[in-house]
Length: 324
Image (cartoon, rainbow, N blue to C red; front, side, top):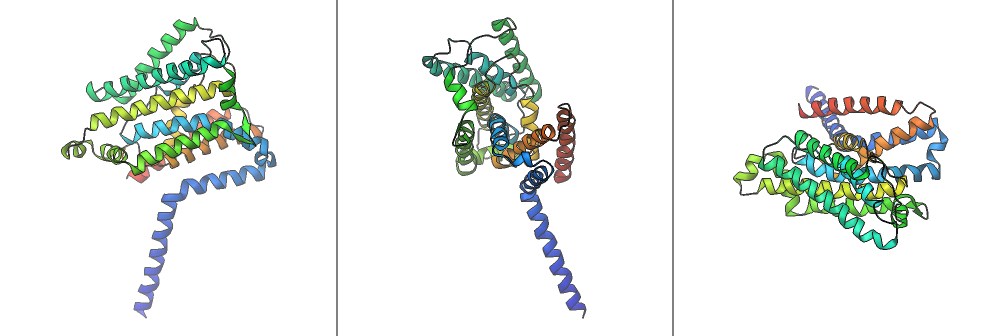
């Protein structure tokens, strides 16, 4: 009799353990599905083709930034300069005459700004021992100053039609910017999960001291992660400029916090060494769904800020619980 009871208890414990594992691994995905279903029930317009296409258009720039932010967080950093890089790239997009021949110079200049800013961030963090918060905050402010000096506070000019296409138009209902996001996500997921560099990223984030003891150049790995983040922020800025159509000095404002929140919600540990790009993208999708639902439900837009704060608290509490 006692053996039967013990066997039953063992079965229950095993099922409980399996459920906890499923929850830990797929909880964020299930939360996204549940959120979409509830939003669709409350507001049928939420699941309309036009609204889904609109959400995808909004999600792509944030998703691109989240990919870069994921690399930085995985090596125990964060990047507050991404929004400023995006705004600067958007200003660059309107700095020419808006002709087709301007596209290549715009992309090259924007990438140079993004990659250069990422390199400066990486050097400050690794070679000068500046905290990631202060290093990226400083470059954010410097870029903002240069941007305002160049535009005199009022950027002007036209976004080339090419960026309007990739930022705001669709192909049989599928936004071009989502295709760009999917390609970037696939490439960098392979880099992170299938390459030697990706393994070095996880080892560096998990324990930088061990990484150095086994002969890895942890500083170089960290710098590359910041460069990746800066480059992807520049690409996101160009895509967002095409979506918005008109550019001001604050394009991308708030993306620095949104990208960090999305990454943490998606299971990327602030302590480094744990998480995936897919998880970060799911976190970004949850933010976009919540923000969209707020408007569809007829709530004031200010509720987006309140909900964002609540999401940050929940994500932080969940992170602390997992790290305990």
